[in-house]
Image (cartoon, rainbow, N blue to C red; front, side, top):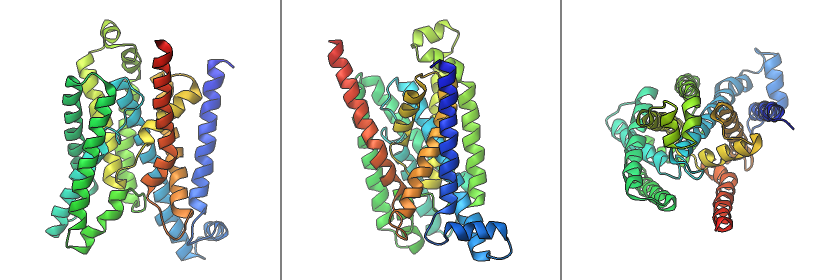
Length: 339
């Protein structure tokens, strides 16, 4: 099989899976059966309740899962390129937890004074939190040469931020603030059309900017010296990677809370499917792969034990964590074989 045929087949598989899980997400649920949904679509004036469930709940939720899943996968790929390590990701490095902490504290303060934050304020707050965590990771990376220790530091940051967030949410007095617990566990359930429009603007802009960096990204994958010899301004390029990955991760955390392992597992699976790490090929595929992965996990989260809904982060961890374990074992085996 030639490379071009493999690329075409890979994209066809992703598009097919995207279509299948999108249809299943729109049609399946405890409140309205697929037959009722189809009947409501065929007769818009007949089933107002079912039509409302489809257009106001399931459709924006499915679009949110696809957009935010794609953003997570893109953020993970950018971080893996930056650190030159496939285990790097926004959740593992504590970037998502930093954004979660900033959003939670800001929302608690705002709701305590009777204020409601809009989407732009949430994204800005999450971005500030993610940049603080990223700044700490960069400081540590300058002192630590082993990637394993850097990952451990990131995990510890995540635990600290999550613990502070849980304390703040648990001991909040206002009933509206206590409801933040569901968001802090990760969920696409609160998505509406206004949120979808905002996240679409941010995520698609982030994807476009990432795609524009695909050529210097390919040179950077071969080493900083090679990238500099090809005319890449390495320092500026590294800053751009940090800003884009933090923005995408912040957007996800602002709307859905922290979601684990998508940013690590999906880029690795995509590179295995396409047999290449070329950013020009992998970036769009990562976006599609993240959308498929999160649509599938969200479908499982809300239908497996319906009407009880699982945390989306719990489901993504079940499928994503084995990929991370395999990655670590594979890297260890490669090092032993190289000795």
